[in-house]
Length: 235
Image (cartoon, rainbow, N blue to C red):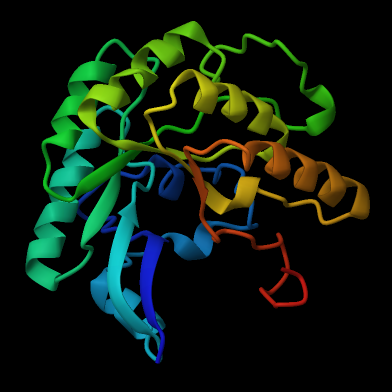
């Protein structure tokens, strides 16, 4: 059986921690549809049951939008779970590059044994037709304040987990070129939710441009279609 490292998964304990998107009413928009079925504890035992039949040899926990007021709490909790239950073996932690505490949080996360990377979802526009070249959207990859926090990844030795839709991948190309010593790991293939021929052609072109950057990797993850079961034909 093929040995698998699961490079992107979540667990959560809603009795012990705060994840606003799994608590707030009404539920915030979710790209895969109704998020309410996710509003239950999901711990290593549940993960192992769902992964039965696969040879999972190691896992990487991905930050799960824990309370932004205390991103270190999530990291400490994951370490407790790993010690108790034997997974994950590594994790991507949270930090907010456009906050005043960005440097302190990044280096505090880097000091934790399991932490390998940071995810902070940059802001952007909701539709490709709204994207403009040269934008300066606050909190985006082109925002000077956001970049001022991002630059601390170099000295911390951590990678960057990027989650952004494909129409912002040219911003990622600039980011990769401007910070060549930081590895960027693109989550969910640039979120190709629209599978129309026109949208897929534009997505493919954006991915091809990003692929030229030597400091970029891509995860095969999160390619679900809203409201439809996952099938190989759709993906």
